[in-house]
Length: 293
Image (cartoon, rainbow, N blue to C red; front, side, top):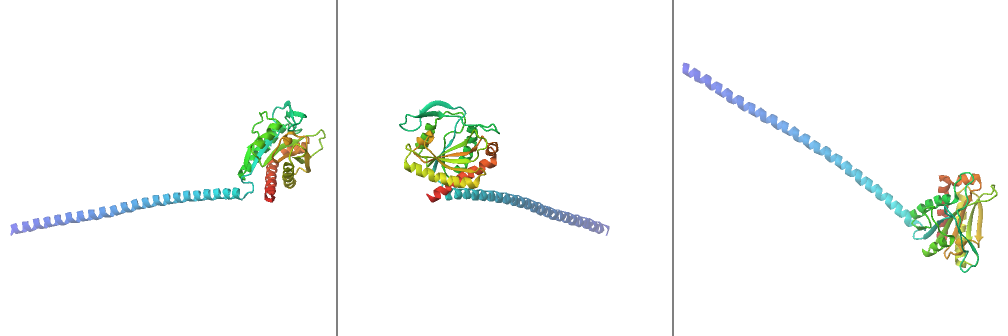
């Protein structure tokens, strides 16, 4: 009886131990499995968050590319729609830092001569030299016309040059410019004189075709400037004595922006507002001419 009882007790102990072991391993497996799922979910969530972030980044890139493309198309459309596309202009910022008093004929075959080039006038209020003001405006005009699709040739882009009026005209001739535009400012001994003038060529040195085209362009520019800038118009003036006109075989216009000898206009012409308005009016005048042409 005792032996049987001991065996039964041992059997119970062994069975209990077996059951405990199985239950323990089973629970550990379940825990491991649950933990594994959590890790997998977290990992998938991490991937998902990274993917979302990447998708947003990609979306932003695509958006920026789209915006850039739209802007590019808008610029191209503006250029393509301008009547100035393909036109050639020579911009001559009048004068230079040092004049050249050596003489040159005022026109082909002429025995009459004039100084090759002067340094121009100077502002009574600003102290700025005309050649400096002329170049400021010419560079702004260059930028505006390039944006309109024009081919722009600059006679000068620095003040330290030595280019005669005859040579300036010939540079425009050489590139077969549709227009030689000369940028100047005026001066007078009478400080009360004000206003802008549009000068065009006439006389025996230039052809009738050049004269008529120059005058027509000058009219369009004068109209646009009258509306676009505060300086009052002094009208269109035909000049027969300017070397820069007489040597020209292409249409030419000289703009006298205003009087540097008048304190009010002198100060005004050096402002960004005036120069920007002036450039805008010149562009408008050219567009109006080529629309009608």
